[in-house]
Image 1 (cartoon, rainbow, N blue to C red):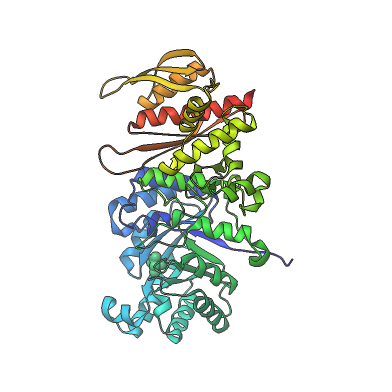
Image 2: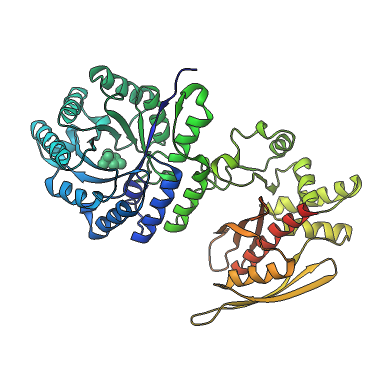
Length: 506
Ligand code: KIV
Ligand code: ZN
């Protein structure tokens, strides 16, 4: 295999991502995410558009002052004031830069900028030169490059390099490109300007209007681009930007054909995605590649059977490689016997063949009516069909007290077999209080690694579903629960994760 060239990962979650509707973040939240991006080991963070508002300015400044590792850049139009403000905010970072841009397509120059191509060339050159007088790293973007005339694009890129730009970005601003033609555009640019991708970084920035942001970015890499601008969870203007997690994992999983390396610490991908969800309150779609809830969940019988025999049958990467914990089997109407038996065994039951067959039939009946079968449903089926007592803790009763100026507290009763256990505890909130009380009963203090809550239906009576992951003695356990009461769903999911943990401790 030849030496692997590096692909620089330029993260623009805090700029292009944050400017999309619904994704705006407070300064603290931006700082928090920027620290996590540094842990993820991206090469550059575009921290914001400083001239656009005092909050943007302050956020970029605080990130530049405190976040170490990646280069910190800010965005600036090809306007002196933007560049000055950008410089004032990024200058505090040991490695900083200014990203300046101007549109180069006829449609943008005529209608948006109302400038002639000659004026645009002049502005590009003047702004790059001015930015270079302030910082030693300047990136120039030709906005709407994919709808620009090729000769004009070459002319402006060449001029930007001669004016001092160290990185040239070719944005597919409106997500118009198709992988083959975008790859060809990149190759033709390099043929015309050989320094691109060598002395000068050749970056691409692809939007997802046709759902092709990632494919276009990969095609650009295969044709000589050496930097990708992307965002966590693919957030960004309109349909978003190319998703960082998809690009990075495509490069890693298909190293055999891509033959490139990235510095990104892939185990930090999921924690970063989750943090973004928590900070913005916007969840990713369940089937989203790499970070979606179902990305490592297996429901169909054939898949569950394959997974139980050899993980590689239906997984091209491990959930652990992207910082997730466990692949889990989801029981539903498509589940087959093997997945079902595994779930029953995880509950701690040892059933003979006939018993297993009987409850499997009952399970299929219930699964036909219910979208998903939770542990508690399974326990209920087993209990009612076989009249067997269980070694599984179940929620019997709870009571929480919470409110403004009230220390949250919880009283809880759990049932195991015929025994009832009860405890009370305080907490930072009602869920913390309930989890503390459960910990007292089970005499474990697992770490809560992940807590995801979602509504399963609309309206005031909506069912809420909670999924948790706990860790104990270097192992992680998954639990899920649903109820119209989110505190109850939280308690059930936690108890189920603890039950799994206890089964394994035996
Ligand atoms: O999409 C785009 O063209 C941009 C530029 C500012 C790089 O976001
Ligand atoms: Zn963009």
